Image (tube, rainbow, N blue to C red; front, side, top):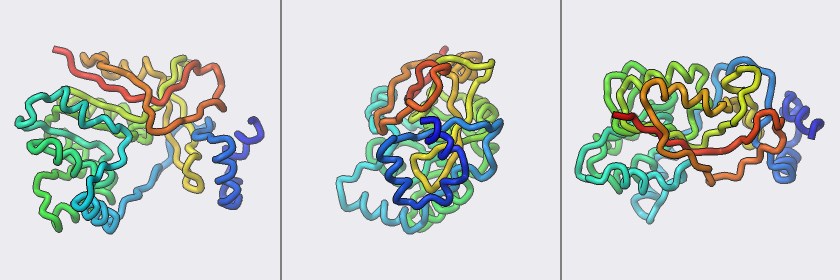
Length: 268
């Protein structure tokens, strides 16, 4: 395991044949490697959506009983439990919204939902082009944090995104300032024991080699304290089963490490 960790930590993976990397992935199924970094690099987790792909998703959605891939398959039932009156307008912010099919699926189930989209600059541009071509007038694409802060949201969805954001505390506090009723994190890694007073660790994501991303794991209590001081409380923290993430290569000093969904709400 020590040798394998060293291989993954180094840049040697850039020179290893892809078929061999796939064999390593299948054999050991590692997702993340702890590395010695103090901050996330620039241009982390580059954009991946394309205009052609979005058009294909719209075509598939219109002609099939289509359900999009999402880091939370139970999002629609959850929203129906929270927002019982489906005829009422609800402001929904999809922070890191990704593909257009997430919006389409929500609109199929919530006709009156007001959908706000925010992602990387290139993704915002593509979704804006799709909106214009297909006359999707009930999408609002937000291009900056300032634009986000001009709105109020009933529900903020962060689907496997905040761990890739370098200034995550600033972003989260800015989202809190929009006075949301609920904030939902999915596919997020938390560990239970703070080490050397650190609130997070930085890891190298290797499960999608040859692409490499970097992200945070968060010590849970420190992460939740960001919201606790602003009068939020947890509704639930449950395991996310969209993937079977293997953490066996991490030091036991972090205690239990879990791949989770976390829903929090504002208290009265």
